[in-house]
Image (cartoon, rainbow, N blue to C red; front, side):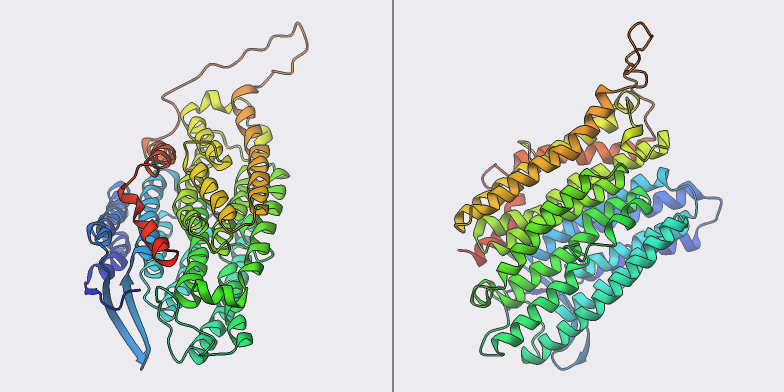
Length: 505
């Protein structure tokens, strides 16, 4: 991070605005459900607008900072909005807004609790994005764990409670590991827990063994939320158990909080040069490749739609880790951009799964024959995002795979291209059957010759409430629009390339 930055209260305002939802729910009359929930959506909109207001300054290369508290000398809670943190905050605030609007029609019981913890979780995640040092990141990261737990167990079924318990066991264990990583970082880093453009640690400050211990402890601590195998065990249970808008946020944002922590460790704590000297990127690459392939194989075996999507997310998030491990410009750019690209695609897919559940009650893919005729808009949007996950141009999924492929060749490691192609084929193997079942199968299509069976007709206008359909359409459209937009020279979204360009000139 640059040494000079501008004092601003806007980062703190962005963190506090989601609490508006808590005040609204507490103060509003119980009978005013519609007004109360739409005011919660207004709070999410205000948060997104506040984050968006920082865009012109970020494009000009500015940073914004505010000190919150000082524990001891050199150990303080501080918010700093740099380009990388802003990039993460922008997509999380946008996806949170859409998920909040979607939830107005989806959540039909105990909505007060759900919306309160939705708001608190958003506040803590924005705190992660705007953290100026690892101590601040750790505080918000752990708060986010306890904020997201009620979202997972919201349905209060036996499956939800088991999934929530498992999530807490994994998350608290990871938090303990992360705490020891920060203590070691503080001790061997001369009390420097801040982030810097080229890293803050060096071989002069600590020995090779000490630095490798710090790195792999960080990787293990953040790897649980990033769902790196074999630390992924909570994900396949939590996603199906949680309500669909919460699943979209778990996959689209909360998994990324772990990946974003790893990005900070690689870029702003260790730095690319030190990672090369320690050769820790080799272990990262191996773990990422294993996760990408094995998670996709597991996805093939799942009949439950949300469980298949959960395993898909495990593999897809490791694209970010693989991109970082390449230590090349295009690889890092593809990995960082995938923070947004995957959030758009998988957020839409989980929200589509929610519409299917609400309108038909079906959870298993094998039961979804002809569903594309009953829910055409939903399944068209699902198909767009599923094809994007395979890397079909001109989608954002294609951009990610193209950059990662280019980065692997830049690193002189074409084996990564093979991994990416294998992943794309496996993605096709578990997504295309869903599309085929929805549009090319229907009840009675296996009737014997002479028996009556009719292809169903498309039925538009009877899908679901607009609050559920509009967010899905917006996300599916952005999957294509952003995929085209990123190829335009000088487009505003390219500010993320400034971060990578500074690290890999």
